[in-house]
Image (tube, rainbow, N blue to C red; front, side, top):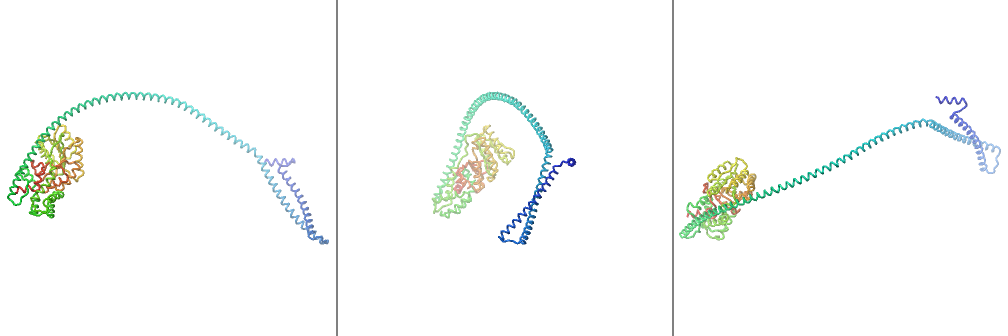
Amino acid sequence: MAEKKKRGFLSKLGFRSKDETLAAEAAEHAAQQQLIDDQMAARMAAINAAALASARVQDGGVKALTADEQAALDAEDKRQAEIQAARDVERAKQLVEEKARRAAEAAADREAETARIADAPQKADARAARDLAEAERQATEQKVRADAAEKLKAERDTKIATAESDAEAAELSRIAAEERAEQARVDAARQAEAARAAEDRRLADAAEAANQAEEARLTAQAERLAREAEEAERRAARAADRKAREQAETAERTRIAAERAAQKAKEQPTPEPEIDVTADGGFLDRITKGLRRSTTRMSDQMAATFNQRTLDTAALEDLEDILIMADLGTDVATKVCANLAADKFDKTVTDLEIKVALAETISDIMTPLETPFVLGLARPQVILFVGVNGSGKTTTLGKIAKRFGDQGQKVLICAADTFRAAAVEQLTVWGERAGAPVMSGKPGADAASLVYDAMNRARDEDYDILMIDTAGRLQNRTELMDELAKIIRVIEKTDPSAPHHSVLVLDATVGQNALLQVEAFKQTANVSGLIMTKLDGTAKGGVLVALSDKYKLPIHFIGIGEGIDDLETFSAPVFAAALSGVADAVSRK
């Protein structure tokens, strides 16, 4: 509104505004251009008319035109020139309009530029204000950053100073610690040296004491070995005397049997083989009566089969069957038949000749195993009795303990069969008979612990013999055999050389099952010898021959009754004569 008032005031004074000046200049320019266009249109019309006339002259040649023709042509040329001129004028107007439009656009551009220039100071002021604010903001930020940097620098300087002080303190502490450690090391070295000196003195004292103890032990051992040697000599002398008496008795019986056989041979046309016999009530007689059941059936079968029969293949097969049925085993039966066939094949034989051949074979197999029960030099002699339930272990142990007691041996009995109360009662009775104490535990107690205590007592109280009864164990019960193995480990731990004898007690009534028992107990208890019991109550006594032929284990005793004197020292010739029926046949004659 103020701008309009300003333009109205200047126009009254004769001044024009820039826009009015530009508009007047544009109108004047347009008038001048119109004049130029009109003049140009007239000239162009004349030029066009002249050009048409010249063209017609050229087209018509030199032909002369009449006045009318010339007038018509001139009119036509004029008309054509006017048309062309109108066209040119129209084109000129278009050019003028185009120029005017362009001029207007140029004016608008100039006006816009003028306005922009007029607004430039305001925009410059605003931009300057923004630049100033931005500069102030940047200055503030720079100041803040400078303050922060100064603060960080001060903190860093403080930390550096503190770190230097701490480092010095740490270095001083380290030096002090090293000095203390060195002092402690020196003190420890002194203490260690003193300890080593004390240990050396202690070891020297201990070595001296050990030497003295060893000398005392060796002296005691030498004295004990001397006593053992003397005792062994006495036992050997007694055993030799007993053996000599038995041999003399056997020789006497043999002589008597030979005399009887010779007398009988004189009375009969066919001589009978010489056989061993014995007086009634003697050693052979007791064995023969004890083996009666094992002998009777076999003897009867032989008598029925071989009565003046030719010894051919069929006869040998029958004999082999008889021997196998008597529990002698296949191998023994084969050996007997082979020995008999070597001398008597295709010859007439009697049952007595068969029995003599059988006795000879049995004696050859079992004589190397005839082993009296002899104690060694170690003290105490540890004798372990093993076997299945009902084999007669406890009774057999009691009978042997009675023998040792009668010989003046100091015997200790350990009732390690803690699972059977009757075993303790039996051993107590036998211990009283033998004058031997019996160690026992509560029912179900650990048998290995009891054995350990018995080993220590036997050693400490200088017993000659420790006899250990174990619980009956089936050879096919792994857990029971493991318990037996535990007892043996305890014995070996206390005395590495023990047990000195591991005796397997077998029941003759079990027959061929005894082979399985020997196999199992050999692996667990390292059996050193056999005792066969209850031969008087079975017809299967021949199994002892099968055991001897297969396992070659020493045989100490055989049991032919329940009495204390019914446990006999094993003699292979006597057993062979009794089992084969030779002794019985001779006594009947």
